[in-house]
Length: 146
Image 1 (cartoon, helix red, strand yellow):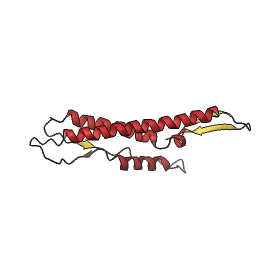
Image 2 (cartoon, one colour):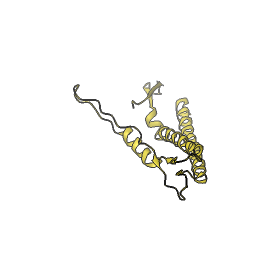
Image 3 (tube, one colour):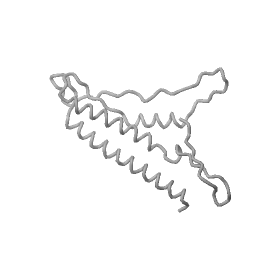
Image 4 (cartoon, one colour):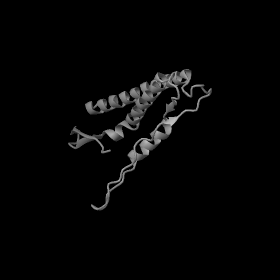
C-alpha cells in the first residue's frame, strides 16, 4: 500500500505542508473494511439458517486486524532489480463456528447467536465510522488552521 500524501499549501513559514493519510487515519479504514466483511458473512449465516448442512462462519476480527496492521507497517523492499517483488498474503479465510446445540439437518447456524453477533458488529461498525469522522474533522481543522 503506497502512502497517500496531499500537499496542502505553504505554512506560516513558507514551507509546504503535507498530510500522510495512512498515518493520519490509523487503523480505522482497515477496521471499517473488516467490519463490513464480517457483516456480510453474518448476514449470509442468517440467510442460510434453514439450509441443510450449511456451516455458520465468522471472522476472528482481532487477529485479522493485527495481521493487517503488521502487513501495512512492514514492507518488503527490492534491493536488486533481479529480486522478485515481495507481497503478503491477503486476508485469511473465514472460520467455522461450533454450535452450542447441534441441528439434526447438519446446519450449524443458531439464529439468536447470529442476530446478537450481527447487532454487535453493527454497533462496532458505527463506532469505526465515528472514529473516521473525528479523524477527518481534525484534519479539516488543521487544514483551515483552526
